[in-house]
Every structure is written in C-alpha cells, then in structure tokens.
Image (cartoon, rainbow, N blue to C red; front, side, top):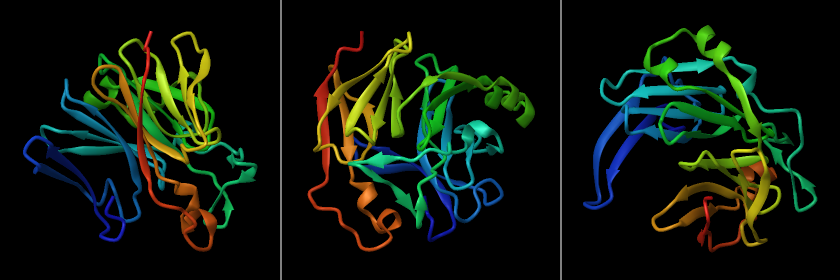
Length: 242
C-alpha cells in the first residue's frame, strides 16, 4: 500500500522463480497519499485489475497492458454502513470511534464480467459490469449500473467460485460464510481460532485458504498497545462448492 511512501503499487510475483516480474505504480492523481488499497481482484482474461480503496472509498481500475488507471468513487455503495461490528461481545473501534470501514472485499466472476464488492462494515453485497471500466464509461454510467447482489456478513475478504457462490470472511463469528446463488447463507467453517479472518482464496483440489491476522488487536483498533498473540495462522479446509 505504500502508506509511508505516499505511493500505491501493484507488484506481480512469479512464485516458481521467486522473482518480482512487474511493478506498476499508480499515479498520485489516482491514488494520492493515504490511499489504502486493501483488496484486489485480477482479471487475467482481459488483463485488468481492480483495487478497493477503503480510505477514500472507491475502486481503482488498472489496465495491465497499458498500465493506465482510473478511480471510481463517490457512490453510496462504496461507503460503510452505520452499524456496529461486534466481536466477542465488544464493539470494534477504529481510531477511537466505532469502526465504520468502507469498501474492502472485492471479487470478480469466473467469466470476468461482473465485479462484486462491499464495505467491511456493511451487510450488502453489490455488483456492476466490469466492461464499463474496460470501455472507459463515465463515472455516472458506472454508478447507474450498480445493483445489489445480495446480503453478506461484515467481512474483510471474499472470493467467488465458478458456480456463482460467494465466500466471506465473517469477522464477527470467527467463520467463513458461504452465500450461494440462491442467496442462502451458511457458515461452512466456524472456530474461535479464526481470529479476524482477513483474506480467503481457493487452492488446488478443493481446498480453501484463509488468513487469521488478529487485526482487531492492533493499535489502530485498540487505541492502545498491540494485544495480538502470536502465532498468526493460515488455515485451510476442504469444501464442496456445489
């Protein structure tokens, strides 16, 4: 995120060779100092990337071929909802106030045509056509195309499978919540050990991976010292997508 540098960058790693093979620096006009680009959805089919900025709530869209970027912001769907996040019976605070964290989880459909997103502190899941960014449509055209995709838990991360199911990191319930194509919600795994599930992603052969980083124990949330207790885990479990 480069908060201390005042730069937002997207790096590409080759995990087979352990090399950085590309660095894209987003212009300051698009991502000024303080930009908090938290999550990213990659469209490898059309060579685009979509970043969620929670500080100045918006989506930064990057053409990976030309390295050109644009920002779409100012829409109510990008904002936090006025609801409290409660974990283990306590309201979560952020910078001294009840947390109101905006757009964070962002995913893209298997055909790479629909972008899904929502606020961390929010229970609504939105969608819009990815082609509007690829075709350079106006901010208003994009705003007019936003639709509610369904409901979600308060979440820091999400992923979408090839069947249209969505999987959310459920911060309040120490869980991974699945919302299927019919809108039915269920916790497919729930355990007190999953302390602030952050990111979630599919691995090979039916595995799903989730990080548990205890984010709510950091000074930004506690207002005092870091109360997190190592180790910090990456968990995996088997799922049946159908």
